[in-house]
Length: 492
Image (cartoon, rainbow, N blue to C red; front, side, top):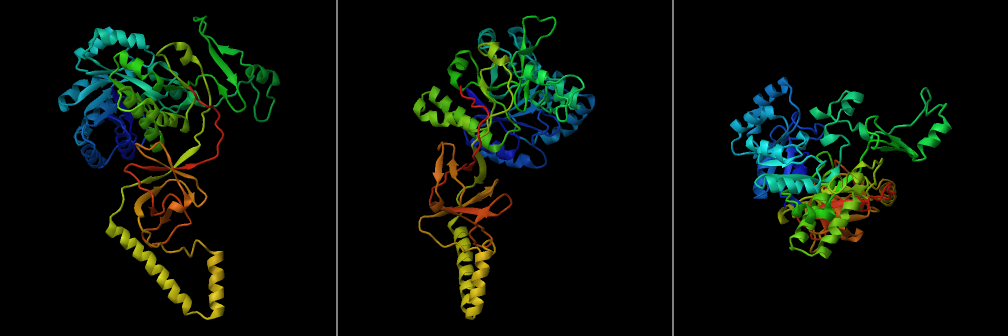
């Protein structure tokens, strides 16, 4: 089975491939249901081409899955030359109006039907096959039984299914709540996730902040006995529950099928899709890696015990309680939640490939020259001036940073800081093949490559390399421990 991961920008695309995805899906500006993702634009196609060369055999899917207005069709036509700069293997679409346009201009690219099209039965799949589609992304309401029946009826059609990430409360994600409450249409890529906002259950005219907030209404709302029921569906209930700082009405659990990959394979699923083009680099890397290792275990490439530590990392990223969606029973999908478990780890830095010996020597020379210059200046001072200088160094340590000195066996790696790193930060290294490994304080220093100075602390915007005794593989991330109390364990 193919593992398909989300790439909201070029950096995320790189980590999709590095952490084990067979394919990644991207969006191009203005034509994706994730407009708030960075998406791709300008000359980024050059970096995408290089990534495809660096990771041969990896595929690139492009989501053009909005509902098109006439003006957007016109813009699509004018942007076609730009789209052709990307090495796109497949387009994900829901609007049939753009199918002939894509077929004419991208004859070698496959057509994948978006989940937004709500394809749920074998006859619909046959129809889409006749239109030139080679793959259907199933509506998330499809059960494994239905998917197996569709694969049996249309064996030459590839089946793609979401296996991990946020689930929309609306049918196949076709939601109108955002447009109604916030003037932002989910079908045009502007979903404001109104189903996950925090609401209060109140009596008309009351005010939760200044009163009168009825204690009777609050008591009933917190009892867990309230449900929503539509008049013509007397046997269907949506629970309503008010907690300390939220009311859960329409927010669903997160999907997680990592324990059921064998069942998905047996049903005939060809591609496993992870949701999350708006998620962080850390999220994309950790989730992709977990499913890669689980798939490798399923295929007998590694043991379940070897895959275990990587799968456990699913619970170290922020998420809502996990569920299996509609695959086995809609009962699980109907349970609403609010809030999410907070990760105990933050991504604090991306680390590049080791810099050359020549470049490392240049940085070390800067550190040596800095220390030599300071020593000469210090020795030229009279005793009273030396005392004053010592006091300044003590009171302004960030202004008098020490120069880096050569250490045998140590290497330097470029470091892009995301969050604060200082001497008290607990750090772990994560890579495509190392679940996590602690980097101890004595095993590294952070260096300004422009001056040769050793940082006392480092954060976003600081030019930095990490000088360390640890061997750091390609694609490594550095994470920092943060003391947070999970609001929901999300354990399966």
